[in-house]
Length: 380
Length: 112
Image 1 (cartoon, rainbow over the protein chains, first blue to last red):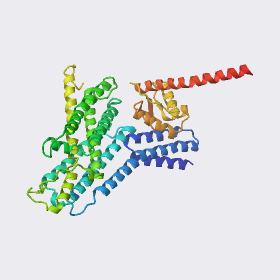
Image 2 (tube, rainbow over the protein chains, first blue to last red):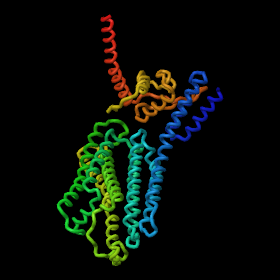
Image 3 (cartoon, rainbow over the protein chains, first blue to last red):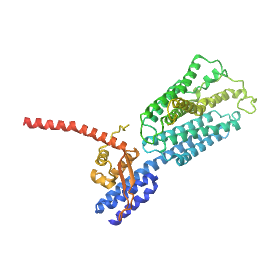
Image 4 (cartoon, rainbow over the protein chains, first blue to last red):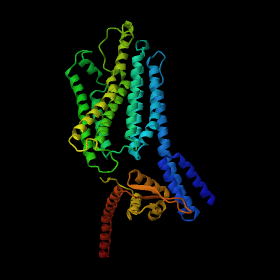
């Protein structure tokens, strides 16, 4: 029986090596108590069985489930994003997106962990990471499908150097969002209770409203307002006004709520209110932009036939280099339809870069204005 | 700001054991003996409480003779507030039920 007790203890000790450092301590704590348990071997076995359960539970929850979820997401992205005809000019770019996205989703946690520590304990940070990864995978899959539909006449949609740079830029923007998500859910960042739920709630609400206002994006309205595509109408200006208002109102509201929550939190180790406000505002704007982008891209990918149509063009391939190549008349309708799908929702992807910066700038500006009235500066 | 969390009966028993002497560092087996919880129930509770910064944990400073160093636990300031709030709320929940039982018993005795 003693041999069995020693064997079970060795199994607990060995399997504890699979746990993160801080979790391993708990398994060792339980093992350290084994000698204190009543001398009856059955009591010691029962105590160690609890240790086995503890270790198995931790391994499944924090190792097996995240890895399986990531593998499932990766398989899904490859299945959706990888296929493509050799004549489709989007195929190489789509494959670059698939590989690039998976590399950054797998690699960034390792990099961020070195600077910001591991994921904060509790279900909410892990759920936020899972949700964030799901949204990023869905966005890349939708963009791949959209590109594939919009580049079937590959010869008229060449991927030139500038387009490649734009694609790489998109991946870098995604990397920024993922890094932000990882840092915000890491152990080194402590914000007051309610700050992140409030920011995420505001982001989800405003994203839902903006998506319902323009499920295929605001590109057509922008084109009309700038005179590139027919005459702008009052609804176009109203739509653009709503987006602009949201970009200004959300940071102001999230900033005010965060400052209020943070000012009432005197716990040690929590970030200064002004820092929390900048973080929460940037986070709200990034999440809102990401949700609008993913919803718009999914809508375009799933319903490409309903994308707003541009008036028939002049038959010139404006994507070609030089832009003087004439599209044969029998292909012009198809060319125009594909071009509309390829360009739809482009502004929502650009917003992924611009909108969080607007949020950060507004929050920093407000922090500076408030800080100049407080002793010790804005971030104290 | 005290957390507005609801705790399970098992977690309350752990909080009660730690709250009995908030300044004392207790080891896992001592808490298990006081609460009657099995190790597979107790340690996940301790982990959860530590994750929420309601308890702090440390290893014994000195290496004792003849046994390994133990992991020790006690409530943090925030944990003490949460424990007292949760335990008094649990006591309040129990009291009316006890009152009704006592009243019922008195009524039954009076009627007999």
